[in-house]
Image 1 (cartoon, rainbow, N blue to C red):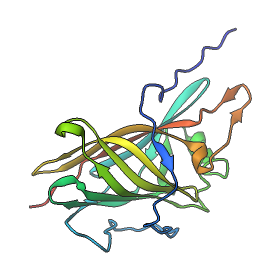
Image 2: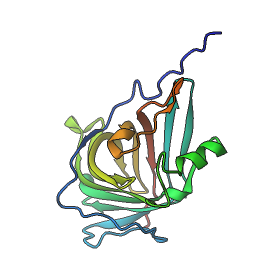
Image 3: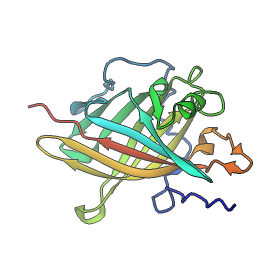
Image 4: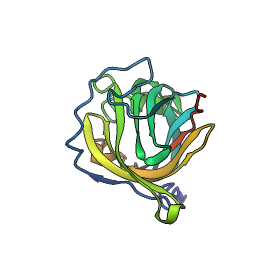
Length: 210
């Protein structure tokens, strides 16, 4: 009996680059806010990100299959400055205990020390540090920011389509990260190894209040 391998869902997707975190940011406390996070140095219009207007999802895979998941609880803010993405910023705080997948057993396993170890690291945070506009005004923006998960913080850069409209702001991104860059190294079974790259999907579409 021959078992066919599962196609890698990250194969044709852009890969985030990683580097040391920005010196301008500090470690985030391991607590979960119940209100949208609003940075202290707001320069523009604060637009709240919530599970009602946004999605944070992922796809992980192994030799024999893949699983989809995401997070039910998170807070965040887009600080919209000058109606332009490149002068604006975004922060997102994710409640790691709100993790869900398409399989109950997997959801429970991901919360253990083999993966996210959510009791010890209950929050993940992304704080943008630079947004580069597309060349010629069309295409994707390059977003750079400090991402902390599983107690490891790194600067990541990924492509994103950002639209600023009178009624809403949308940030759409799909890219992969290497889980081992963040200390998540569980290999899986010898005959069914887990792939290192995980596909991340961001769909931030908050409406603007008049």
